[in-house]
Image 1: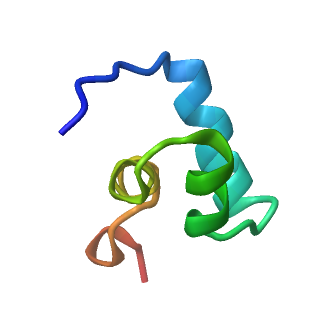
Image 2: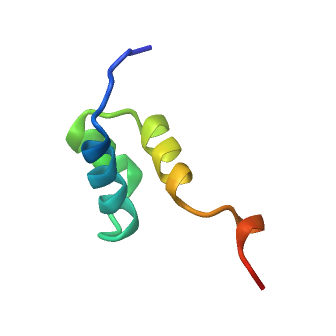
Length: 55
């Protein structure tokens, strides 16, 4: 397992590529050399949980 630390700005850009630009996690992972697992964690951290939505 890698111990890479990524700057918050980098993480924000990666999440933006997945959520706003609709690139796949796999594509971004391969292009940037970041594990897909890390990207999924970053995306989950910024997306509101389904139980957090107000009805």
